[in-house]
Every structure is written in C-alpha cells, then in structure tokens.
Amino acid sequence: MEIKTHESIDQTLCGEPVEVTEGTSTVRLTCTANMAADASGLVHGGFIFGLADYAAMLSVNHPNVVLGAAETRFLKPSRVGDVLVARAQDETPQERKHLVKVEVSCGEDVVFSGTFTCFVTKQHVLAGS
Image 1: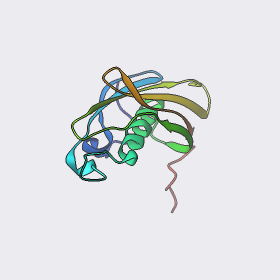
Image 2 (image 1 turned 30 degrees about the vertical axis):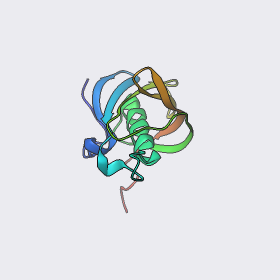
Image 3 (image 1 turned 120 degrees about the vertical axis):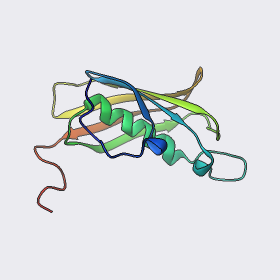
Image 4 (image 1 turned 180 degrees about the horizontal axis):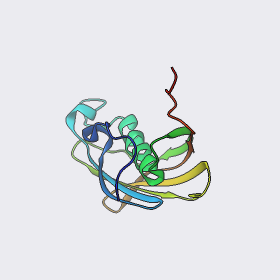
C-alpha cells in the first residue's frame, strides 16, 4: 500500500514500515546508541513513543492525519540493540476521529501499549500559517 503520510520522517529514529494495509501498520525500530538515556544503554521512552506514534499515523495513512491525544503505558525497559516492532490497528477507520491501538514488542515481550487519538483535518495543520 502506498504511504501517504509523514513522508519526510527520519526512519532511523521513528522506525521503518514493514507493512501498511488498510487500517493497520507494522513498523520496526532498531534501538541505537544515540537513543540511550544513560551509560547502561537504557533507551529514552521518547523514541519508543515516536515509534508507536508513527505506526498509528501509518494505520490511518492520510496526508492530514495529526495526533490529538495518547493514553500510553511503558511496560518494560528497552536497551540499545533491541529491535522493537510496533503493530497498530485503527479501531474507527470510517471516522474523522480515529482511535488507534498500538502495541510495541521486543521479541515476545510487550514493552509499550497505548491508544492514540488521531484526527484527519480538512487541510494540513500548517496550511495558511
């Protein structure tokens, strides 16, 4: 499926799309040293959130999709070297307001879960600025 949103995103920081279909996406991110929050190799949660957010945007896959809110949980820590996979499912694909469920896994372990409230606006949010 053609990707219609977030075409300029840095996939080394937010993940690489593995699969994008109507209402779903799978995105993979390898955690690198520049994502570490400390000397132990703990990955800063912002990168994991960014991966999940990108997966949510791809599941809606509209040029004007924006994030309105998110309810999330970090369930386990991630480390430099981990390969994370985000799976997103748009629960309300026919509406202007989309509720997208996202889970991020490292192997068999779910490390993050959330519900992202996304909106499709009539025009780009920066149009006319």
